[in-house]
Structures are given as structure tokens and as C-alpha cells.
Amino acid sequence: MERKDLLGLKDLSREEIEFILHTAVPMKDIIKRDIKKVPTLRGKAMVTVFYENSTRTRTSFEIAGKYLSADTVNLAVSTSSVQKGESLKDTIKTMEVMGFDLVVIRHSMSGTPHYVARNTSMAVINAGDGTNEHPTQALLDLFTIKQYKGTLEGLKVAIVGDILHSRVARSNIYGLSKFGCEIRVVGPSTLIPPGLDRLGVKSYYSMDQALKGVDVINVLRIQRERQQSGLFPSLDEYANLYMLRPEHLTRAKDDVLVLHPGPMNRGIEISSEIADFGPAVINEQVTNGVAVRMALLFLMMGGSRDEITN
Ligand code: CP
Image (cartoon, rainbow, N blue to C red; front, side):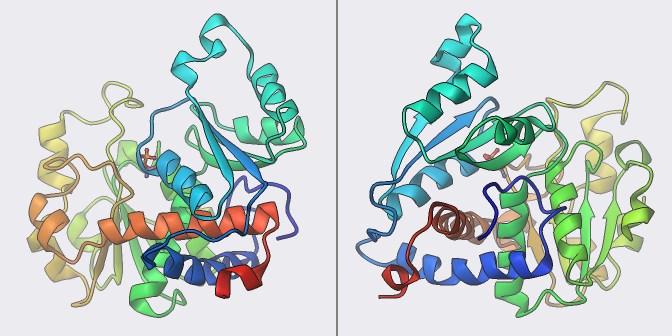
């Protein structure tokens, strides 16, 4: 990959996205082996720096690095010198001069990874910045859709829920639109930002209308930690209108695929019947997340392709 950093899907070309997804295929084979380790990134070092909580993204980056033999370190922000007032810039410089080649960063403020990228020689991967982008989540979503549908071209995709606060929605919209997908968003009007039509996205307020004939439903988490009071009356009211339940699927195509980035609020945005027994591929998304992140680490820290395929 020609880029030093991966900051978002907005600026990535379709060809770059296809190349990353293509590279993730042999990575997934490595995860299935008995011995899940190749020497490709031996001698390289990466650090994860998460200013927000995470289960999937941080852990999958760490194990992805280990499967490729990179030295991986997690900076535990809550017990680090950040708590003594150390600035972001100084924290990142400290990681750089220790010799890390790549930093994976998550921050509640949109644009933080871009700021970091301008101020370090390390490669930077955005693991989620405020309400802006979560590019690796969208890449694993695209990889998963392609795995089940065979193509991304021209699919009808509905994104359900809190679009306003969702960096996952934004990155998915940027990614899917490069493949000619018809993108619909659905949720309460207070959680759908204006101006999405400029990105070619259709906004809906009724699940029945939005899900008619769709190939993929991507259900977003209700972000209680970002929720301003008053955007919808109550979680019960939200669940009544927008929780994905089995009867909604009759509106979609017979082979509809259901995605959720996790963590799930069961009984609020998704029913357990869908999450556990329906056409949901949520666990497969998590596995694919490791493969896609292995691909990115490989491309950004300069591994040799022969070592992956042998
Ligand atoms: N999907 C996602 O970003 O999950 P985590 O917050 O657990 O990393």
C-alpha cells in the first residue's frame, strides 16, 4: 500500500479497498491453521493506544499482529501517564522514540488520528475517532458481505439506528458507495443527520419501508454514552419502533444478511432471535476483523507476500 496511514474510507479508492480485501483472504486461512503464526512481520513493532473502551477492535489488532510475528504492545491509557496530564502529542512521541513502527489509535474526538498522523513518523491506523470514521470496521463489513454475496456491486444495504453518532455508518457509506450500492438509512428523524442525500443515501423513518427488498441489514448500536437527552423518548420506545425482529425480515430478500458491529444491546436494537438464530453473521464479522486487520498490518509494515501464501 502506498499510504503511510489508514485514516478513513472517504479518501480510499475502490481499487485500494479491493486490494485490502483481496489481501485479507490468505490471512483468514492463517487464522484457521493449527499453528496460527507466520514470520512475515518479525522485527516490526506496533502499539495500540485506545482512549475509549474496546473489546473487538483492540484485541483483534493485537492478535493480528501476533499472528504475523510483530511485537505488539497495548498502552493501557487508564493506567498510563495520560492520567498524570501527559498530552497526546507527547504520548505519541514517546511511542515513536521507543521504536514502534505503527500505532493503532481510538479517540473520542473526531480528527485525532489525522492530527497524530501529521505529527509522527509511525504509520497510523484509525480505530475509531469520535463520530467521524471507523474504517477497519467498514472494511470487515465489506469483506463479510462479499464473502456471503460474492460481490458488493449494486447491493441494496439498509443501515439501521443511530446514524447521527455512528462512525461505523459513515465509513460504511463511504465504502459501499464506491461499489454502486443502494444505501438506505433508517431510524428516528432525530438520529438521522441532514445532508445524506448529497452522498446518495436515502433516509427512511419506517422499518417496513426501508427494509423492502434489501440484501443486507447493518444494525447499529444505540450509543448510550454519546446520547444527548431527548433525541428519542425512551429505549422502550426505540425498541418498539426500530429493534430488528423476525417479522421485519419478511420485507427483505429471502437471503438477507444481518450485520452488527458489536457490542450489541440485545432487546434494544436487535432481538436475540435475530442475533442468535436468524441470518446474522456477527461472529463471522469478528473473525473477519482479524483477517482484515492482519492484511492492513501486512500492507502497512511491509511484509513479503510469499511468506503469507507459502
Ligand atoms: N465494533 C467495535 O468497534 O467494537 P469494540 O468497541 O468492541 O472495539
